[in-house]
Length: 151
Image (cartoon, rainbow, N blue to C red; front, side):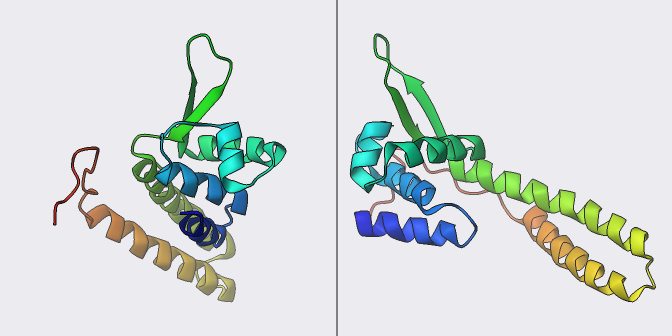
């Protein structure tokens, strides 16, 4: 299982996610029980508590994790947020739309006929293409507990 967790971490590292954060996310995708304390996560993935704290905060701010305490306990338990992947991908799609506006402003800034505008137009064309694909794509399938496919 830890080899798979490491694969998740290395995949996310390509997009700038710190390896510890990737390991946390991979672990919380497959661990049992689904809620884990920082101590449990630290033990499972072999990370120091200090590095874990900042990475748990990062993943929470990105929308991947939620946390809670239990009555009578001071321990914080983390888990994957409901629809975490949909939320994170939708944020990325929204950022594509934001960059389209920035690229348009860039062309206006340097002038449409300026040689530099070609580089900005290339970025705009790429992000416009991506935005059109996402706009026409069907919503992701709903898959929750009890919805597993049977073979």
